[in-house]
Amino acid sequence: MSAFLTYLLNGLAVGSAIALIASGLVVIHRVTGVVNFAQGTFAVVAGLCTSSLLGLGLPHGVSEVAAVLAAAVAGLLTGLAAIGKPGTTPLSSLIVTLGVGVLAYAVEIVLWGDQPRSAPGLAGSVTLAGARIQTQHLLVIGVAAGTFVLLALFFGRTYLGKALTACASNPYAARVVGIDTRRMGLLAFALGGLLGGVAGVLVTPLRPISFDTDVTLIVNGFAAAVFGALTRPVITLVGALLLGVAETMAAGYGYGSHQLEVALGLMLVVMIVQAGRRPAISQEST
Amino acid sequence: MSRRLGLAAGLLVAVVTLVLPAVLDDSALAVYILLGLAAMVTVGVSLLMGYAGQVSLGQGAFYAIGAYTAALLALNGAPPLVGLVAAPVAAALSALVIGVPLLRLRGHHLAFATLAMQLILLSLAGQLEFTGGDIGLQGIPQFGAGSFVATSASVYAYLTWAGLALVMLVTHNVITSRPGRALRALATSEIAAASSGIPVGRYKLVVFALSATFAGLAGGIYCFYTGYVAPTSFPVLLSIQYIVMAVVGGLGTIWGAVVGATAITLLVQGLDLLAALPGMPTYAPSVLSYAVYALVLIGVVLFMPQGLVPAVSDRLSRRRVGVRP
Image (cartoon, rainbow over all chains, first blue to last red):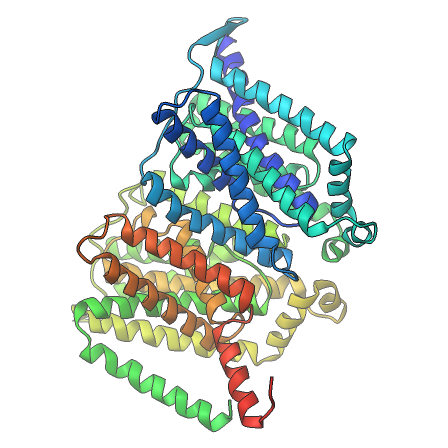
């Protein structure tokens, strides 16, 4: 029983990290209609930055915040490439973000080499109802929960958040009332970078990150985001937690080598079911 | 481009293609063969993406299926020719099976689904017993037919370019036929195409299988040429490379795929030479090739969305007619 509880709690932590990546995807897709292939890259950039900054002797906290800001800058730059030029279609933008991800490989190898790097996180573990859980896992769950609450407040209660939502639901009307949709799109990319960065900073102590970890991160994040049809954050969160728990259970009960297949298989099933339920006409008009 | 000019250019290309394997040394021949194989896959990508409007980020998976099929057959004693024929067939059959559920997806969903398919396949190939796990399959016999055994690289060069010619011919016939027009129609709007009587689902499936067939054939030749296959031979970047080549050359044009594959291969090759110069850091080759793929892809998508071949032929035909752009 306690093994089950341990797997569950660890799964929730893994799921929370996936949720953070997925939330970045959702924010960007909601505002710009672009699926950002470079979302995993932001996490990698932040993770690698943290390990370097901590290695330089900077204190915890400062290093992590600086790394997250670096990821936000990466997000902004990706946005400039993907939607900076007027008239770029969302599918072209997807291919551009794919290119940005590959370009990041080159930069990352030059700066950090091609070997995985890690960073120390919170040490120790806590025992909850007979289940041991690493403190870092609890931190991941806590930060993800806080971030989702903040996001909900930001989109629901602030003027800026509402302007972002307006761009998503009707770009033309948003422009008419004086919202600069391009600037909002760039803001969404920066926010996506920030969220990806938070995920990267939290994950690096749990498992080492190298330049090509972004593929695993992005497919997991995308898998969670498709649960919420790439627009609904709450369902995305639920999807990410389910995914994290499913992966951890698979690993815990002896199918450790099939984690990736579990995530990808779930994603495919969800997408195909969704495609079957939505009529083709509504997909083509969007 | 006028018809006669096109014919002359085609003849010139054919002659150069046939002469090159006789004069190139082995290391240049390796580039020449890999270029031809990449072009073969890229023609399929160009057909699928440019003509039928379906994005596949997993084309490398069918390349891998072809390679593994031919390798397994050859290692188990089947004649190489059987392996070479089975490679495209196996790729096509798997595309038919995978395509039924997958092709219900559109746009970015399809892109991620095909990427997922390749990741699942690579992960399985790395774990299963009969595929040799992460080590892969080694000691694949040379290609041959009857008593003839291919020992020199130039045989593979001719085989590759014969394969490419076949692939281009098939593609040409597909796109100039009635189904070709149907494909172009369904790329614009599936609903409009369906309502004018085009069996959208079946056509998408067939073109998906056809592009997989090309990749499978290339994979089959590849495994005989290199003599080994492993999961690391087919990274996700390989699939992205085919997209880059197709986009650079011009989507939906046969020659564009060949020109794109040639341009990218030679560019990366040139940079590899540059990176091998003394004084360059050890990571230079991978960094330079990543950077080139990325910058070329971003640049072309943003500033030359039509690709090289359509852009050049547009300019040529404008000059002939004397219209200023």
